Every structure is written in structure tokens, then in C-alpha cells.
Image (cartoon, rainbow, N blue to C red; front, side, top):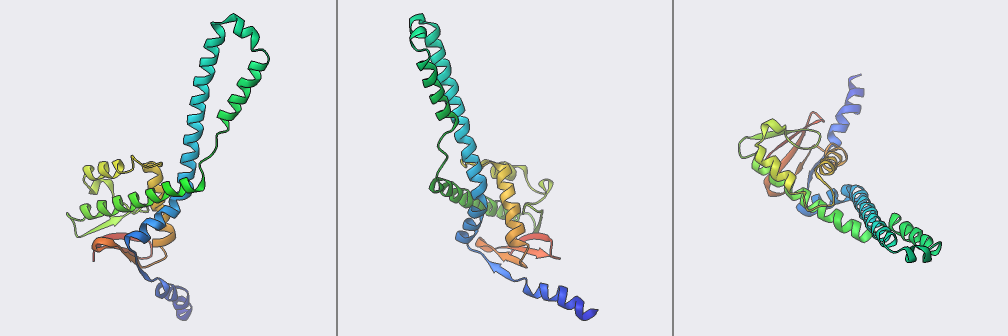
Length: 204
């Protein structure tokens, strides 16, 4: 039984390697995770803009017809057909292309990586090490509120918001961090994985 335990658990511990990750790799990994969320956000933005444009065009056309009885008579039924074509075009807008999606995903990866590292560095000024949750963030009550406000504000220019950014960090933890014994991050930061499930940030 002891040999079996070693083969099952000891070997897995040996295979869990520590990874060194520079800023470029960190940003690229986060961008790859962000891509589907960015795509969904951009597509939703396009649909929203199209719906608003249709509303404005329909209201403008209706006001014109109501104020001109002669025009109202002349546009039927051709006018109704043209309005339907306009409506279909605005309700089925051209989706963002892959280049645009990856451009925004790359920006999201860079901003999230930079904001997260800066957040950890500032939080570690007051303590030797920092326990992190499944989103690779410390307990809110253990960190100054100003840091949380700054972290949230850093996402304002992105196609995604704080909720999606948290999802990206959680996925990063599950897919990349959890399978290692930890990461050596830029600027002297270290992210350790303890007992296979606890994350702790500290200085190297």
C-alpha cells in the first residue's frame, strides 16, 4: 500500500514543477483566456448599438410619416419594405472580426497582468505573505479598500469588466497555476501552491 501511495501521490508531487513567468508570457496566457469573454462582450456591444440605431431610425421615420400625409400614402407598400430591410440590417449587424477580438483580448491580458501584479506588490508592503483565494486575490478585509478601488478602476478602458476579469484570473489559477508547485513572477514576486490547493503570494 505504501508503494502504491507513493506512485499515486508522490509521483504527482515530483511532476509538479515550478514555473518562471515573465510579463510577456503572463499577459499572453491571460489574453488567451480572455479571448472568448472579449468576443462575447464585443458582440453584445454591437447588438446593443444596432438596436439603439434601429430605434432612432424607426422613430425618425415615423415622425416624418405622421407629419406628411402625402408622403405616408406614397411610401406604401414600398416604404414598409424599405423599413423592414433597414430593420433587418440593424438587427443583424456585422460581428467584430478576429483581428479586433484578439486586439482587445491582448489589451485585456496586458492590463489585467499589470494591475494584478501591482495590486499584490502594494498589498505585500504590509505583510510578509498574502493568502489568495481561487481568483488569486486576497480576502477583501485583509487589504486596503483603496487598492480594490484602484484594481477595479484599471478595467474601465477594457471591453470586459471586473466580473470577467475575476473569471479570467480564476481560470488562470485552475489551468496554469494549480498544476505547478508555484510561479516565479515578474518584479520579484512569488506565487506558491501549498498542499496542492492553497495559493500564497510573497516576495522571492
